[in-house]
Amino acid sequence: MTVKEKVKAFYKKASEGKWSNFVIYPNELKAYAGMECVSYDPKEDCPADSYRRFYNGAVLKYTRLCVDMTADERAAVISLGLQLKPQCFWCTKADGSASGINNCHIQYAGREITADELWLPELKQRAIDLGHDIRYSAISDIGWGFYGATTGEAYDGLDSFMKTTGVIGSARRYPHGSGYVWAYRMIYAYSMVGISEPAHDTALSIAITDEAGNPITESVVGETVYITGQLKDIVDDVALQGALITLYRNGVATANTDITEDASGIYSIPYTVVSADVPTIRFKTHFAGT
Image 1 (spheres, rainbow, N blue to C red):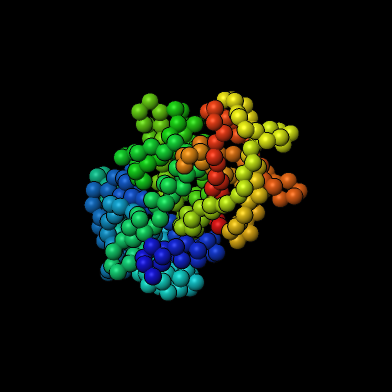
Image 2 (cartoon, rainbow, N blue to C red):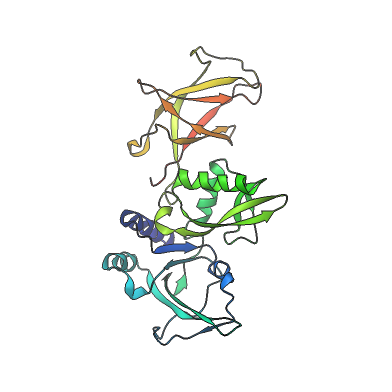
């Protein structure tokens, strides 16, 4: 089992237990930059082998001391060949004050688990697949974010993504050109379970009709047509009623919309024609927590 597969199995365990103390920081050092530590000093109550700094990269961590884990949480980590590394120190500031850090890093073979092994690239790809305007952002913790011309528009993209996929956590806003991006700062590990599973591609026989159900062979830009079909090979019999889908035209995602089902099991969606040809469409469905 690769480290990535171990993490996938851990996400599943965390999801089943709704373990909210396990979190992912895409860049721990950036996430804690606001604490303005000038030194990382030992605490008298820390284990001798404690990690005494913030890591400049992705981490999976427990937000309390390692000894505070429940038996089930500890067993899930250890059974997968992952390790517990105490993170315990004083964050001393320029004015002499200090804040105590009492966490526990989840590592593999004495090192941090990488962003790729934590499925963060797949998180970004899922956002792209769902049609969000994703922009590179070097100053953000995760390196990319949901773009909008206004801060509200950018946040709406993030909020929609969280509701669709179930991937929740905290986020920050950053300026980006003439607009803004909202980017993940922290992610609850249990909420990543759906990202570590592939989005469900489904096969269907397509018919393009008008609202009355009459076949359309030529379409007019701006008119609404209806794409209908009997979906096949539904993974795990997941109910599709009301699920968000992505429309693909010539391999490119064009829009997100809702899917509906009639009594005979035929699914349909409205589609606004964007060019004179009748498009070839496939469906890609996305489910939170599946």
